[in-house]
Length: 243
Image 1 (tube, rainbow, N blue to C red):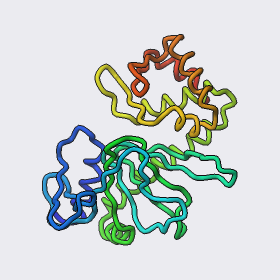
Image 2 (cartoon, rainbow, N blue to C red):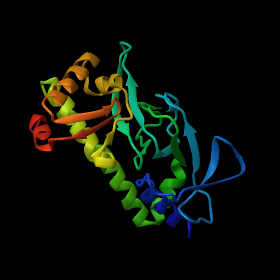
Image 3 (cartoon, helix red, strand yellow):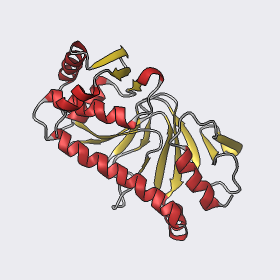
């Protein structure tokens, strides 16, 4: 397997959390920065695997944008600190999401982990760009992931244009149900806190809680615990969303 083939294979495999095809070669590497081995086999190393605890920072706002990152396990939030001290969450990053793209030399947002045991592969930006120049398949794969990020951003702009808080919460739950890998009996995991959801939707955390209570009472969703829910009536959920 060539370096380009291994890189492309990693992007595909990282979208499947259940896949056991991840291994690490720790020779000569620190515990928290092991050479990341591609699925099944690889000849050359091309990225490093980093493991984070909840609330750890992957990179900071205004930091030099020298690397790209790929979520393998766990979840993270992309956020910016506004001049008045408020936090604005721009996106939630789940397994298979490639992030860290910047047109400027410095980062406009920071990325922080929201789940324990979050695993992220870090790639050198210049090296990845060089690989993309030589392999159209890899370039298409990266482009598709980047386009997915842009699509989420556009959807969020529409979501924030909704006047009602219930519409925003329904839109968020619908998005998470679409993005997340559903577990047993259609269970969807919410790795983020209610405070994170509130900052993402630009509403108060109490409003988030009231909206979720309304949806439960109307039997549109059911919660197994604070971080796991199932959509009971998808048609009703979509009807509440802003279109």
